[in-house]
Image (cartoon, rainbow over the protein chains, first blue to last red):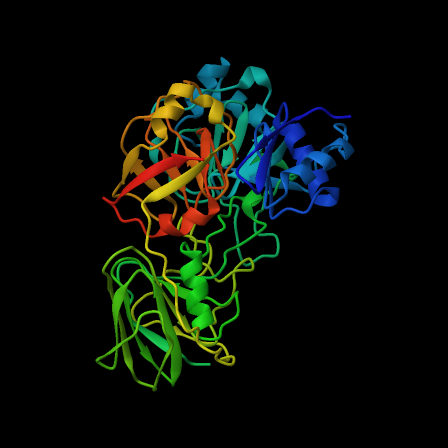
Length: 200
Length: 281
């Protein structure tokens, strides 16, 4: 029996609260495959939103979810990065190492897309060690270029389009993150594993 | 099938149907007609199907020229409608010949008028919908001068209703407590219930920004979480934001309340400067 907190969101939606994004991703994966019918199932940092549902049905279904159910394990996508970001040195300073060592660490990780949001194609990539956590910019930039590879807290993300942004930008990539004409429009859908590499 | 040509799209005219479902986890807003009741009435008046795309105008209206005989209807925000120079009724179907200039004038009250054509506007759907979302611009682009819009095959016109009931726009928006209602204390709730807010100038299809009494709330930050249509977010400024159809799919400010579904059509027609009373139910 899994004990989780279910919070009502109006008449036709609810949030299920869990302890972290990995658990939220696991719950969302299970719910899509065998959970109650919903218009939208939206995992986030510590919650899963069920929209277009009878909250009582969600409450009744939740005990069937095993907390050990793994999150979706998607394909590995390689993302070539030119590490020339304006905040590369700032990240190095936070980590107490050189810019080269930042690149070496970033390209050694296998990150996992846990949830999306903010803009179509933007994925929150998990896998940066806790001791490599970085703060957001004190004042967000008015415009971050598309393809910017950036860090905040222990998350990594790639801006799919130009937008304001407060994450620390370490580099740029020219992979296409979003194409609405494709059957799977997001390159880094939840579950996708991501390896960064130095662009050749 | 050729249909109509956009002569002047006005300040913002978009195509809208009932919106996009099932893509919020990839960051794609639902979009869809903001005044759902008015859009549904317009479709019904021309014999359309529930998923037909209609034009949603914003304040300034739209001018189109027909390329063949077309049955159309205009609903939503009241406005003058002229076809070939003649006044035609708002909220009723009218059939005009090819080459007719149809002028949907500026809204005399409210914000959004809907123009439905028999057969529906036929553009390729994007992710299952012909709606334009103005947050990420997924879907067909906003309408532009010179653009030709194809129309689908007209269905059979329904018997027109004897009376078209147009709800007089109220000025009360009812709120249910939301998932983060506990970020406000009892005193803040008491102050919010019955408070009057003015609709701010930067309100749009994404959300209504409200200017009025500052609502105090707990300090701190919330991890980002999924957002529903009608969510009332309370940023640190204490000025509530009501999320409409093009809202971001996740957000980090607490959702303290959710607008009652029946009041969302009213929210679609509130103009900057209009006053609304928030009532907690």
